[in-house]
Image (tube, rainbow, N blue to C red; front, side, top):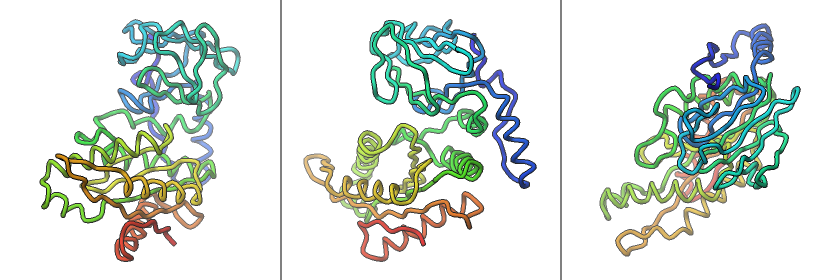
Length: 308
């Protein structure tokens, strides 16, 4: 069976204490095997380390990488290590194997690149080559129930863990990192006028709309609380984040939220923040986006404001 997260003794990296600590973490990362991480599916955030020369992926409990998903064949695909490269081969699966939304023809193989997204059934796995520091940042993200029971997206607990991990990753690797914080305008009025079941419908329909049409597989979408939501955007600078926020705002405004034959008026106010040189904590990043959201509310709602 596969050497998976439970077999590993390492913990999530904490990049504090200056360059010496960072160098130690970089050295630790060099010792890590290549791995596949469940980005969407169960258990979320779980890591499968590629410790054998050839490993099968499938629904079969005896597969080297066993994933419980009815859309995955019992023997769906296999990964083969060739020196420092990793090759993925479809094994004649029923529903196909997709890499970055492109289907791998049955019986053929593809050399995986860093951060390739592999879709099997309803599950998406992210590939990280051996020695990548990002592997250390996923140590605890699959260790508990992290889904919001109503909307079936991430909950606040997962969000805060992922925020810390992605913040440290971006600081260590000097990559872009942005955050979108939004809530629904006059949501209390919807509950008071149409009932709480209508409000629950809006929240579920909203998350289906945003997750299904506007986010990349690697984006982290979470319910912060009530009608508040956050999107974490790794490797994303503020211009692209603001463009996405505007698309989300427009999608919510124009979507037909129909409950018991009535269209409900739904709009959103959105704040956007970006990791800049002066930001030293993940909490500052989310507070900046929250302040921008507050300005959007006070400026008339149904708009996007960039944190300054």
